[in-house]
Image 1: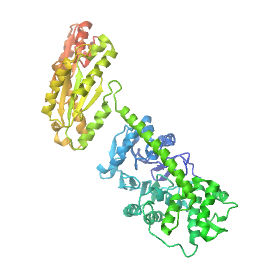
Image 2: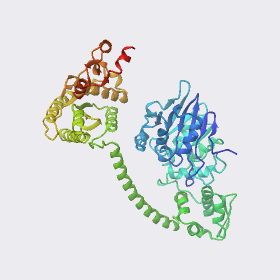
Image 3: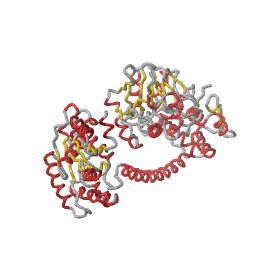
Length: 600
C-alpha cells in the first residue's frame, strides 16, 4: 500500500509531491526532481493544495536549493500555488514558454522568468544535469510544453495523457484509457494537432509518463501514446461519418457511454443508478447486459432515464462523448440534452456576467498594483516592466530621472503631508507637460522617471531644460522647488549588452540614477546627460564627517578621498545639519564612529 500522505518516488530522483484529494473527479499532480542536492518542481498546483505540496517539497529539499519551477502552461490548477512558494522563501526561476509567461505574471509572481523558447528548450540544473522541453502548441494552450528527463526517460506531460475519474490511483490501471479519452475529447482542439504531438514523442525513449492530471503511466506507454495519436477530439470540428455497427447497433454505442459513466463515477454509484431501470448493466464488463427498450427508442430513452434519475450533472459529464457519437453516426442529439442546453445557456450568461465583473475587478487590481498611492502615477514596478517590454521589442528609450532637491527641507519644515502635496503638484505638472505616450513614474521618495520612446537624446535634453524652468516658476508649491535631472538614451549602452534586455534595462537605470546624483553634486536644478565614470563610481558619493578638528578626522578624510569619495567635514551638529539640509549627502559619520574607523 502506497502512503500518499508522504512524497512518493516514481523514478530515480523524481518524486510525486501532490495531494491525495481529488476535486470534481480531477486530480492534480506536482512532481519534484532532485539531483545532487538541487531541485526542480514541475507544475506546483493550485491554491487548494498549495500547503500540502509545499510541505512535501520542504520535507525532501530546502527551498533555498529549489532552483526552478516549471509551468507546463498558465492555468491556475498548476500555477496559482507559486506565490505560496515565494512567500515561503523560493528564490529560483519560473521556467515556461514566453506565451505562458505573459499570463502567469498576473498571479502576482515576483520570481524571474526563464523562457524555454529563448534557451533552446533546455535547462541546466548543474554542470552535469540538464532537462529538455518539448513544445506542444495548442495542447491545450499556445504556449504548452512538456518536460523530459533523459536519465529517467520520464516525460512530465502537463495536460497531455491526463484523465477524469472518480476512482483515482497514483499509477494508471487497465481502466485508465477511457478516462484519458474523456479528458482529451473536451480539452484538446483537434485530432491533427494531437496526432502531431504524439508523433514528435516517437523520437524519445519514454519509460514513464507523469501527467499533471490523472495517474502516472508506468506500463504500456506505447499504447497510451498510440491511443491519443488516433483518437478523435475537438468536438466543434466535423468528425468522419461512420455507419452504425452491424452487430449491436445503437446499443453498442450506449456501451461506450456506460464505460464512460463507470470511469467517471465508479462502479458502485452506476450500479445503484441503474437499479430497477429498463437497462440492466454488467458492471464488470461495463456494458448493457439486456434492456426492455426497443432499438428505435433506445438512444432517446437511455438519456431520458439518466436525466430523471441523476439530473443535468450526469448528462453534462457525458455530453462530449454523446455529441461525438451523434456526429459520427448521424444520430440526432437526444431530447434530454435540450434541458442541458437550456441550463448551459443560462449558465453561460451567468458566467459571462461574472467574467465581465471579474475582468473589471482584475483590471482595477492590475491598475492598483502598478500605481503609486501618493501621486497616482505609475510606480517602480511598472517602470521596470515597461522599460523591459520596449527593449525586448527592439525600441529605443530615453530615460529622464529627476529628483526634488529640497523635498527633505519641506518635510522637515512643514511636515510630510506637505511633502506629499508637493509631489502631487509635481506629478500634475509632469503629466500636463509631456506627450500622452511618455510614461511618468514615481520611483521612490522625491525621485521620478520619464520614459520616452519617440524622442532623440537632444530633444529630451531640450525638453528637460524647459521642464526645469516650468517647475521652478510654479506658484502652487508651498515654497519654490528645483529639480535635478539625469538623462540617458538606450543608444548609449554598449553593443555587447544589447542582446540581453534585462541587462540593458539595469544599465539604463543605473546610469540615469548615477547622472542624477552627479547633477545634485553640481548644484540644485542641474541637468547631467553625459558621464565618463561608470555608474556606481565612488566620486558620485558624498560622505559627511562630523567631529571636532583632529588627527583622526583628517586621516579618515584623506583615506576616503584616496578611494575617490567626495568628503565634507563639519565641526559640530549645527554645521552638519545645514550641510545635510542643503542636499547631496549620502552618508554621515559622526564623532562616535571616527576614532574606531581611523583605527582600522
